[in-house]
Image 1: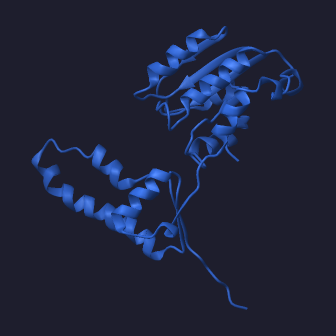
Image 2: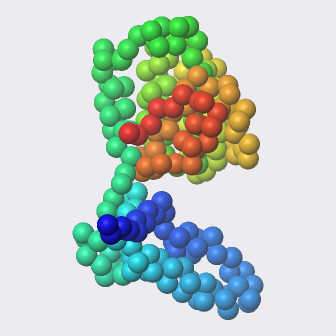
Length: 212
């Protein structure tokens, strides 16, 4: 019998754009090697198209960017995106459909965690806030957040209105303490299909709410 092997490539982000943003160009040496490094990342990305039977990304705008960059057809790039945040948004607006807390947690106190770079739309900070407000009507909640970014003040200001306690840790290199403290960890990103955070939380046996 003949074994058929196919190559599947999944890209969580655009390394070329990330390189452009993070590339230091303050000295002459960096400016000289910049075009060579850029060519390297472009070549590596294009090689993925050439050798892959299926190439997938997790954001629609990234698919469009790659199609323009390399002149490839739409059917050559697939999108695997997080589809649950919209469902979570629906649930937060239909309180009657939410299960009673005691049947799930067996106590009235609930500690909710969010660990993410603080970008309002793509990381679904608004969705997380909606979920906290809903749960705040049913439990005595405590909210723990960790991460940094341009919308860090947004979530800190929005969560001041909850009746329970709220603590923001900022950027952390070791997340085990938060994993162990949380009853549930909400991953509200609109785009991440399989974030590293999910895998890390699974190693700590932390209950998660995220995409299917």
